Length: 70
Image (cartoon, rainbow, N blue to C red; front, side):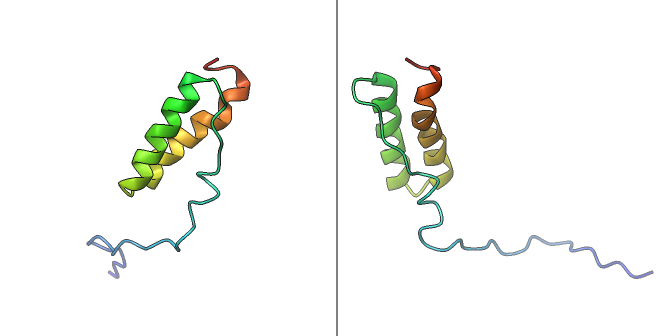
């Protein structure tokens, strides 16, 4: 019986520099406290190297126009 399954964790891949740039592209709406707070959290997450966490805050800022946090 030929068992080709991998029984160990493979090494993680490194994404190219700038890969998350498009994902984090957003601008907080002036006068919106929620956008400003999300922007600060996004900045903090980026400083810690947490690109996935930062992307969640960027999404929140980009979704301002839906009225979810006016």
